[in-house]
Image 1 (cartoon, rainbow over the protein chains, first blue to last red):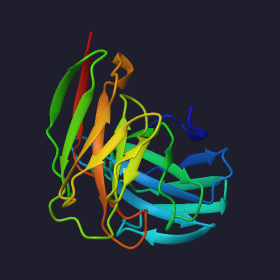
Image 2 (cartoon, rainbow over the protein chains, first blue to last red):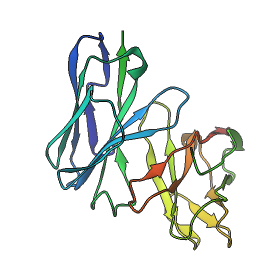
Image 3 (spheres, rainbow over the protein chains, first blue to last red):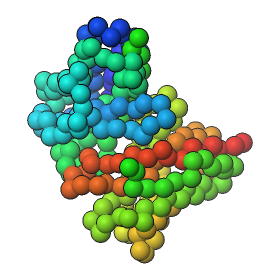
Length: 115
Length: 111
């Protein structure tokens, strides 16, 4: 138990659906992150929020839309996804700002399958 | 592309020290080396980081060569729960979140 929770743990969606992934951290951290982990590919950073401001948008397609309403919650809104978007989506948080924190705490991930 | 090179897999006997090597020959002077691990069906877990001095914490030791072109993560007394993929990562920009992850080393601890 890392103090970072993600829901749902598993999600199957069609290409025309709209869904959202939720992440919550119970650690009082100031930065939150979304990562994508595809089979046989390294972990890819998608978005970074530091003090509730987005500081990184790593050339992610617009069908992925992040939202950080407060320092404890992070959402990833999904629409018109492609089958190649099937992956494990991981959320992480860190205590200080994203620029200065050395240690990130990861949630267990949401396994997404796009059909 | 990842800035680190690691063996794809390693075995270690339970109770022995596990030594995981990492090559980062293109590392720059201000770039830290980080180690994370990912146990099956879990998110990655931070282990340790360092710049040029050797570091030790309750989980592991990090030995960085004097030229900083390689490092070794040491788990002093490996247990079956240490079976995981271990990632050696180098920061590539000015911010600590700018990490390039590679494929890691699959470490299997055998009884």
